[in-house]
Image 1 (cartoon, chains in turn red, brown):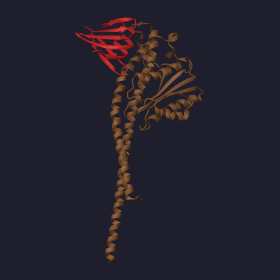
Image 2: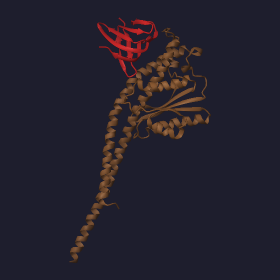
Image 3: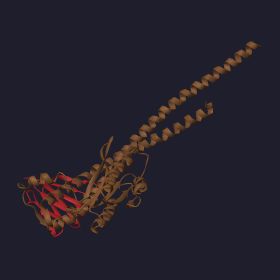
Image 4: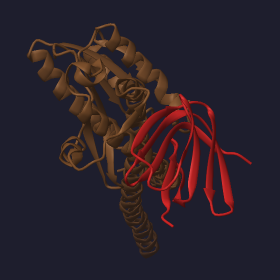
Length: 86
Length: 295
C-alpha cells in the first residue's frame, strides 16, 4: 500500500520526517485525518494533538498553532511549537 | 635597548595573551559547532514556510493580496534592520555588516528617501549610533540570550509589524551575515516587506498548470494573513542564527590569527632576549679576562 510522507517541523528543528500510514491533526475548523493520496489541502491548526500511525506504531505530538500543507509530495506540518507527547 | 628584565616581562605578557586568545579560539570553535547545528536545524522550517508562501502568493496576486506581500506601492520610507553581534573580538564581523548597511543607507538618503534604522546587537548599535543617531528608532540587545528561539525574534518582528501597520514605512530590509562556510560569511541584504517570493515564484507558477487545485481552510487570504507575520519572525530568527554561527566562525578565525601573531612575537622577542643576554655575558668575560691580564 502506498505510504504518506509526513514531516513535522518546528522553528527550531525538524521533529519527525518519515513514511507513515495515517496522520490525524487538529485543524482550525475541525480535526482531520490524512491518508496517502489525500487531495491537496491547506489549513491553519489550533492547539492539540497530532497522531501519527505507521502500522501498529503510534506516535503522538502536542502542537500549539501552526499550519498544515497536504500536497502531492506529502503532508507537512509547520508548528509554532511542538513536543512529542509521552 | 631594553634591559633583560624588561624583555623577560614582555615575553611573559605576550605568552599570557596568547593563552587567552588560544582559549577564546577553542571556546569559539565549540560554540560554532553548536550554533551551526542550530542554524541548520532551523532551516527546514524556514524553507518550507517560504515554499508554502510562494505557492500561496502565486494564487493570491492582485487586489486580494495582503499588504505585507504587496507592499504599499511606494518606496519612500525605508526601514533598515541591521543585525550584528553583541560582542566584539571577532575580526571584521560587525564592521562588514555595518559597512554594507551604511552603503545602502547613504544611497537611500542621497535619493531623498526617509530612512529609519533598527539595530540588533550591542556592537552594531554602537557603530551606527555615531553616524545616524537620529534615525535609529529601536535597538535590541540580545547578549542575554544564549540560544535564539522564536521568542527572541518575536519582539523584533512585532516592532517591524507595528511600524509597517502604522504606515510609517514602505520597505523593510534586513542586513545580516549569511553563513556560507566557516571561512566565508557574506553580508547580505534581505528584503522582508514587501515579502520577496524568491525563486519559489517562478517554479510554482510553472507548476501551476499541472498542479492539483488546493483546498483552503479557512480562505487563502486568511491563511496568508497569519503566515506572513510568522514568516517575518522566522526570517529574522534564521538571520539571527546565521549571524550567531558567523560570529563564532569569525571569532575563531580572528583568535587563531591572534594566537599565531603572539607566537611570532614570542619567537622574535626570545631571539632578541637571548642575543642581548649573550652579548652581556661576552662583555663580562672580556672584562674579567682583561682584568686578569692587567695583574
